[in-house]
Length: 282
View 1 (cartoon, rainbow, N blue to C red):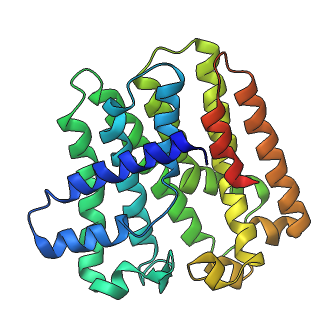
View 2 (cartoon, one colour; view 1 turned 90 degrees about the vertical axis):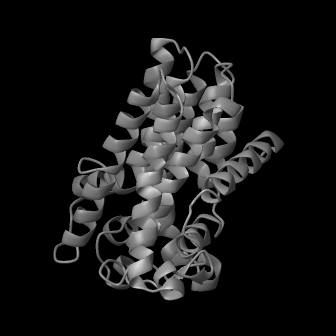
View 3 (tube, rainbow, N blue to C red; view 1 turned 60 degrees about the vertical axis):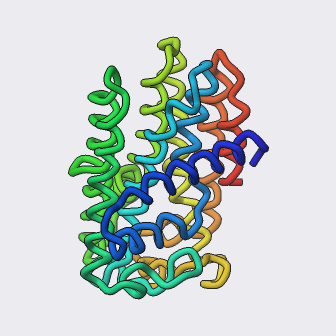
């Protein structure tokens, strides 16, 4: 990624650290920070900040909103790894939160990150907080990420067709990515046609991101992934490579990249930072 994205990532890290430092209980703070600081590309915050910058908004103003996205994403990873869910031992090359702190504190750390994300938004943006909170809540809740998680669990007992598989991942993974772009638009004035193109980009990128993850699960080792290989891959259920074959999954990924690229090329502004983010799928 280019240097401006690296600068923004550093600013996001600083905002995350500042926010976590305010958690009063040291035991809880350590568990929250363990997963927030475990690494990751910070793609969702960078998507939000890219949209703000593209339309001449103030990036620094949007940092708390960017941090709120990363809090929600991290909460979802902590809970996804739990024994009752995927029962994973590794995340980003480190023991998962419940392996490090125990299941009870891992659950509470995830709860705190989710709740504190909305506290961050409520503490800022007097003219924008309602819109930002609504976008994030809908993406994280019963019609977004949580619905996707339920479909993922239900899929352990049945093979999904392609339409259902896409819907599952558009909810589980794509909803928060789409929220990142939509939240960015709250900070700036954007032509109507660009609004639609950005939504198309986010939808294509979000699904492509999951297809890429499925492909990585069958082509990379646990060491390369930094996590336990996806249980669905091991059980041959509800992944793009299983449904379409590896070649078919690679073609599906290429289609999503093409759609995302076309959406960016239709914008009325320079989308170089979003193009750099899209490159993670290539």
